[in-house]
Image (cartoon, rainbow, N blue to C red; front, side, top):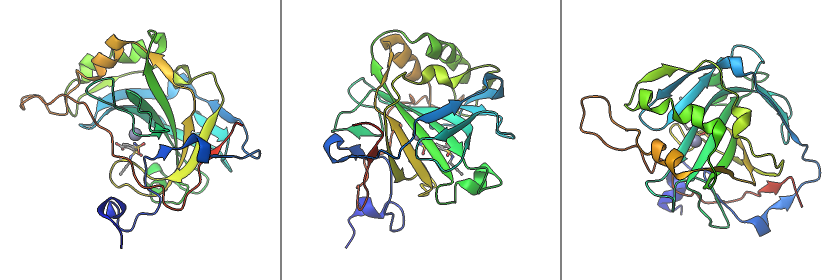
Amino acid sequence: KKNNSELSVSGGTRQSPINIQWRDSVYDPHLKPLKIHYDPTTCLYIWNNGYSFQVEFDDSADKSVIMGGPLENHYRLKQFHFHWGAINEWGSEHMVDSKVYPAELHLVHWNPVTSTSFEEAIMENNGLVVIGVFLKLGAHHAGLQKLVDALPAVKHKDTIVEFDVFDPSCLMPSCPDYWTYDGSLTTPPLTESVTWIIKKTPIEVDQNQLEEFRMLLFTSAGEEEKRMVDNFRPLQPLMNRTVRSSFR
Ligand SMILES: CC#CCNS(=O)(=O)c1cc(S(N)(=O)=O)ccc1C(=O)O
Ligand SMILES: [Zn+2]
């Protein structure tokens, strides 16, 4: 008998997010270093989709790609977005030993070798790779500030602003360590097509930068304002999965 959280997707057995228990993760010496090559000119625009704000990339060629790590081939960057809380005490989707971070960055990539489009890859086993980076309260993040400065222009749902040159590599921690596990999208259609790569080390952002996220709205212009906060999915059962680590 499945409880209701396990029925979140018709019989889902590999749902995300999860709580990563550091001591239960298994070091895998075959995991390679993750290789990231993003071309800043593939950045297109930022938009508020009523759930988060997303930065979309031109994925019509192998210009912004990741490879290595647990991956068999290269994957193209499609978009990145964040999840965050109303206050600093919560906001991330994944947890590490039940520790929650105030926010989490997701960089969504798709497999152009086994799929002919992003839309197709969403439905494919291992069609997607999402890199997760935790955000913690600390020093001002100069690279993030360029993004934060554009947020007032996408305050309302379905607003968009051009964002022509941005290198998301500046949002990566320098530490190469990561965990990886097989999971799902954390928003509909919740498909179980994602290889998750969760970076061990968070990046630091300051209070003002987090508060700028919280000034975005779920609602469209003219509607009663609802602040865009707490846009994270609850933890899902690990079930029959092992989280692998790239580090001892
Ligand atoms: C149809 C369809 C779809 C999924 N799109 S997404 O993979 O970019 C995505 C992925 C994620 S997450 N949190 O699973 O990486 C969240 C949000 C989105 C999104 O479109 O808004
Ligand atoms: Zn996400």
